[in-house]
Length: 161
Image (cartoon, rainbow, N blue to C red):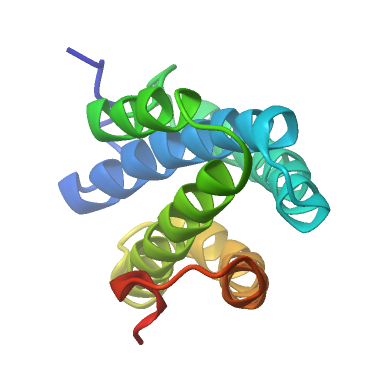
């Protein structure tokens, strides 16, 4: 079981958001590293590297915020994200590219919804600010993922808005 952040300073909803953001950020970095190694398309490799860079930076900001609140963050991705990494690690070439990009589309749409909700409804001002300031980067990631997915031939429900 992954340790959940506990803080008397944060509401249950804010704690849940911080935990999920930490786990998701770790997963994005790990999957991005996998993409830099396994992707056949230069665009997918570059996208993977961008995920490593941008999510590492966001993870660092979240660690600082959590530390200031006395919150211990999870140190590994969720079980769902670990399963995704396991599945993707068995693929290569164009098949990897398509599956990875489909996952990035789906994942970033979910992340954007969570970050938008937290930026509007969060209780803690610093957690709300983290969500608000991270949101434009996630939206840029989704736009880039949509463009690359079209180019790599991803045809699934992840492309639907």
